[in-house]
Length: 335
Image 1 (cartoon, one colour):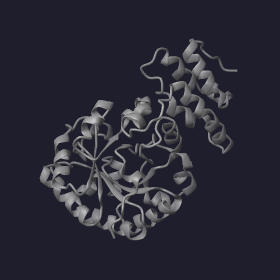
Image 2: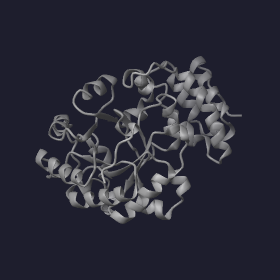
Image 3: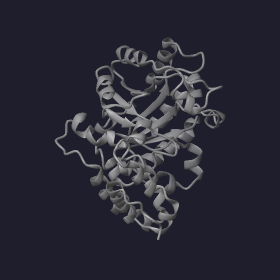
Image 4: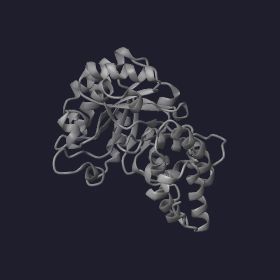
């Protein structure tokens, strides 16, 4: 059965799932900048969910919604069970990773290598859709290795769309499964935005989202003239304050733009709450290091929040002290 998309699932901007980056603390942090952008978990494998600590892997704060659970795997029945668990956990959407090119992911026969097996991807989508009432979507590349023609891309999308998938997030670079590291696969293969634009023209009934090399608000707005949505990856981590204006500029909400100081202040009670739950301060502060990038005295902010001695001795108040250091150039000393 084709699922009807909730408003959160068709929104025009999202932050890409990124390993070691888009955990619950980073998502909560981003929510202090934007209330409406669609957020993703890190990729979580089906095996991890079925056999691991589900609370550690899946728990999130209600403030993080709308949030998507991204799954990694190639077994339709295992993915279906994980999709059901994700829906019960409160996620707004389930996304299948068909884009990661790392050796570890390939060894499990999931990620980008699945682009060579569109029928299997379709089976996975069908199995998940049968057991959930939320959208099941796919994130993928424009191609892999020598299967990178536009015709190859259309073949993949057509088969998976016929299985009921309505939203495709397309990283506008091919992936080389051998010879390039995951980092190199994000930069070396050339961007082919026109292929993604053409995909939207050829499949107007589908929701097509573009990803890859997008770092500026002007780029986001330009892409939205051609596709339904834009996904921002590393720029969200390296320059998170980019998202301070998106509720106003993309979602046309009559809301103020939070200052960096406002965001720090909002994070203090969250840090206090999470420390009481057993988390460590550095698990939170590591996501905030880039908040002042490009601003005067940003190094004082980063230095304070990355000092292991200060982190070991301090509590949530270290965020305010780091803000003071950034504003006054006072360098804190460990107690």
